[in-house]
Length: 285
Image (cartoon, rainbow, N blue to C red; front, side, top):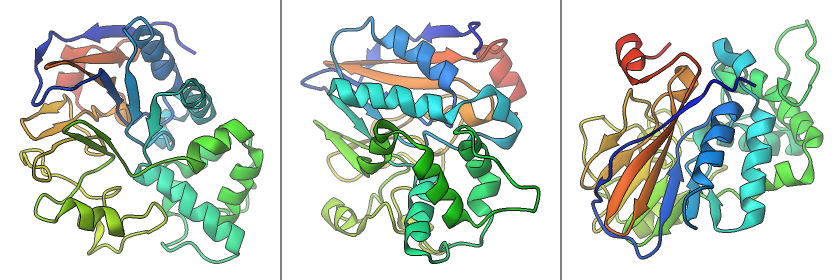
């Protein structure tokens, strides 16, 4: 793994709502084990805090396969889980694996056109565990996920088995993609399931899959939403919504949000040769 990783820390700024104990949220990782290791090493120097991973731990961009190691990411997250005070949320890419794994166990078809997960990082994810691919075309994704599950250690499997859809921390609601601001939170929570794959017309109402317009600044009543899933060149900081997916899947930095008392700041691990000016100029690669 590359050691040329730069860590940057933003200035403190007022948080939308105070917290009773420190919170750190870590955005979409997509297999960037080297960036996660650097970021975790840096965060370990901070006072004790609750840590929440916002999902999409796996599935690197196919063009970035050789830079990333999904198995290495899951090992690190498993370490944090074992140490306590850590919640791991499911992202839509994690759900691809979990839904396909269930389909493989049940010997049924995946609920999407076969090949979608494979083409969006599934192949690179499974390869990280040393799975040998045939040259005879794409394997059935249910069987692929079942094989991946069998290659995992118990600790790695535990990361996926213990994933959540959301986490609460005082006024903050942490989720991978979002919640509908006009729908009561209890109603959304009651219908949410990691193993539900939404149809195209219901994607915008699923907390693992929905997309926010970057200019939208909304959250369930009385809450501040912290999420990833919608990649942007820099974090979006609003009074009711904070998005910290800064495009690590496309070559950008891995971002963590720290909130202490009534202040917050960002911690970012930058890939070798990349900085804020270059990222802003080049955009997502």
